[in-house]
Image 1 (cartoon, rainbow, N blue to C red):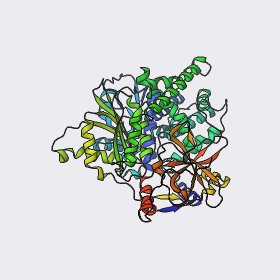
Image 2 (tube, rainbow, N blue to C red; image 1 turned 90 degrees about the vertical axis):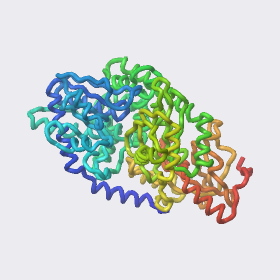
Image 3 (cartoon, rainbow, N blue to C red; image 1 turned 60 degrees about the vertical axis):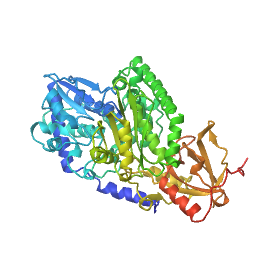
Image 4 (cartoon, one colour; image 1 turned 45 degrees about the vertical axis):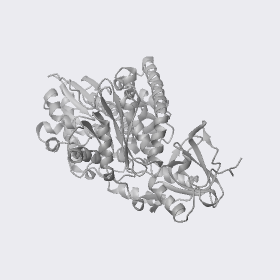
Amino acid sequence: MAKLTLDEMLDDVKAREAITEEAQETTEMIHNATEKLIDAAVSGKVTILSDYDADGICSAYILEHTVKAIAPDCDVDVQLNDRRGSYGLSPDLQGEDDRHYIISDMGSNQLPFAREQLGDDVIIIDHHLIEDDAIRNAFVDNTDNNKGLLNPHALHENDEMNAQYCATGLAYRVFQEMPALAQNKSIQPQITEKLENTMAVMAAIGTATDMVDVLDTHSNNREILKDGLRRIDNADEKNLDFVIGNMLARNNIPDGVTAHQLAFNVGAFLNSASRMSEIAGENGAARMYKAITGDESSAKTYRELDFLQEQNTQRKALIGELTTSDEYKAFVQEQRYGNDKDNNIAVYQLPDNVPHAFAGLVAGKLAEATDKAILCVTYEDKTQSYSGSGRNTANNETSLKAFVDSIVAREAEAFGDQQLQMTYGGHSDAIGISALNDITRLEQLVDKFQDDMKQKPLEDRTYLDMKLSDISSQETLAKVMALEPTGTGLQLPSVVVEGKENNRNQLYKRQRPDWKSVRIVDDETKEKFDIADWAYNEKSYPQFEGNRIALVAELGISDYKGIHVELTAKTDRAFSAELEKTHFQEKNHSTPEKDTSSER
């Protein structure tokens, strides 16, 4: 397996930053959509239809304020999707003749329906993959009403050549291009320092949360994140929208905030209300949007934020229940150590009538815990069908969506009939399943074509070349911070840790057998390092000579008791298989019984 140092990573990032440039064809697509948006704003009546997640909320926020900057008196109506329904435009959608419509974070694959219901001049600002060639061609054709269609994924069949913006990033690019284009139409937009800062912060929140490529050389994603994080660090009551600032503060955004903290603190908060829609019996996304755009001088605004924060706490508790159930734990054990341990994808069924909005969170946690792709679904009595989400692991070579596309297309080949009815879509490695009629047939297809989901060979993976003793140094912290923002496209490679284990039977957290710190003594310095494992199982740590163990861990930044680099254990099935081969099969060693020589 390849090794990479932090210095080499920094050099590579600088080199890629130097060649990063938004392609002219992407900029032209943004310009065309911006001009259409300006015309819509001037018309006096605009409706913005957006998705229910953080990307949908942040992009709607930016688009509404962009329209208002152009035409302060414009009647702007923002409608967020209700997560209790299906993804995309509602089949009951009806437009009004005297309004212009902007669709954000959805709608690409529904272009014919959108135009039929809302008019040929509908504006779509989206980043989801386009399934239909005719629709793709409409987005690329920059004539007449097609100028209002903005989705860079339409430009090249090889998606690696396309700008990897999320909807928020695209909305922010529209805001950035708008002043010059508005002035060309003799319009002087009303833009203040506070508005500029707030729009940049919202752009960073949406970009971080939607997990787009932070080192994409065809977009401004990296600069959007850097600029937004910088403005957060320099924010005060005068230069940032007070309600947005309050939202940041109540979600524990520290000085020197990272993209990860922004996504998993603020982004998760924005997502939480829609995830709780089914339980609360209301459109949570709409309530969240109303709260963050509320009157900063009204106590009602902050009471709403208090309520939504408490609701987010309830969401976390519910996810905790789902991921500590006996069924969940048994599934993890089977996928790690049972007959299915060598499979690279699995199907997990939640209890009936669990809100399908939770499926994506559970799928993500299972993908981490098992190191394999997960399709997670729940049966809903009211629809009499299954719905859910799928998440891939970075260690898989095959795209999750490509795999699902393939098995659905080959059902007749495999079984001689076509029983499966499955509606899904999304991105390469994260999909939403809005309807599924037969989970048994899905499981059969996954099992039948299991070998088509390929894992990256161990020799093709890159691990961080670092001594255990260097982890806690200030120099390492400085280098890791210099790599920020990190995320999809720029993740710190895992580090292989080896040393003598201490306290095998101790260091459990909150009396839970699956939450534990694994303590290793560094060979050189004899310093003890604690590595958190949130899905602990003793089988993951077979000891070889001298009570030594080896594991794969991730580096991360923590601000708990002072900012520092910390290690978290990571499930890596290929590494474990190689460890078994080199230390136990070839050397004829066996896993000992529980270590009883732990320190007391």
